[in-house]
Length: 180
Image (cartoon, rainbow, N blue to C red; front, top):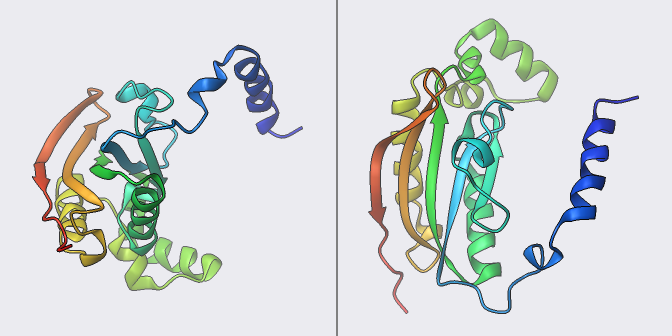
């Protein structure tokens, strides 16, 4: 039996007790919604450290919570599909496992199994979450695909696993609206 069996059991409890109206697409969306980009590490759960409930915010997760072309495409898709402007919060964390990507031997092993590029994998390492948050916020702000008609603001934070506190690193920066 897989480890997923327990999660399916919990899903049955969820389905038996959920207010299905919370899961329906609302007739009218708010003008703006928050979107959290964070790490897929199971210790880093926005529902826990931010108190995010269903419908409160969008959440994109990947190894390290890093911004890449796929994340940018997902942000554009969500904004266009939901017809909203998005307030993006990039949240990296201390003790991130992607720090192992700074080790050339580990990187080579991953690249061999996943077909990745060594330089691309090295760039994903979160060894200094303050620096990587700054880098990813700048990447979002500099991307023309995410003009202000899609993204309202971008901010950056670090979750300190030693304390459980989220520290602001880059204050919310408003994006310019694209010309009509």
